[in-house]
Image (cartoon, rainbow, N blue to C red; front, top):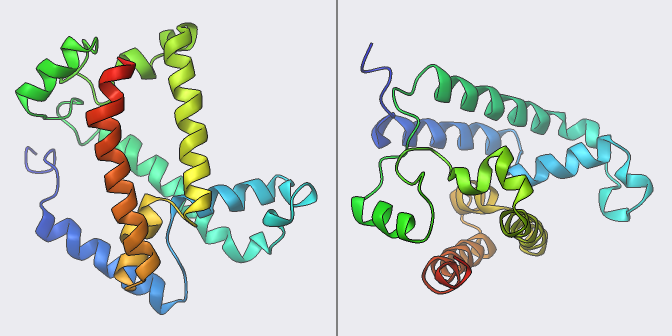
Length: 185
């Protein structure tokens, strides 16, 4: 049973991701989580308010299956296949995060200081979540897709714009972690 409770090694998960990408490309489909949000918004009537959402969402129903599968898979992975919900991160990183006020670092998958119900009553945590969510949404729209769409789907189909976007995502992440994050916390 212990072998089931371990993360899949790269030589299993990597080829499985490649197989899924091959099947999607063979079927003429593109993968990306932000396109699922576009499909969901159109399903809910956003096409009546914005031209961006005017497309045949029924042709993209499979995107909604991806969202449902990701949610169910995440739930199963967290509650049935993970012996410890904490992420195994470097002890120096845990120490640095704890010095910044994240006492749950190394003990929980997400920092409870930002992702618990109590964070909704803290104006600083709530502001960070709202501003961060807006910036991620704006960035995904401006880049023409999210990190999963560009890094997995775009790179596997050798698209230069996806390579540029992924480089930008990494540079943005490094700037955030090393320059902005210490200023915010």
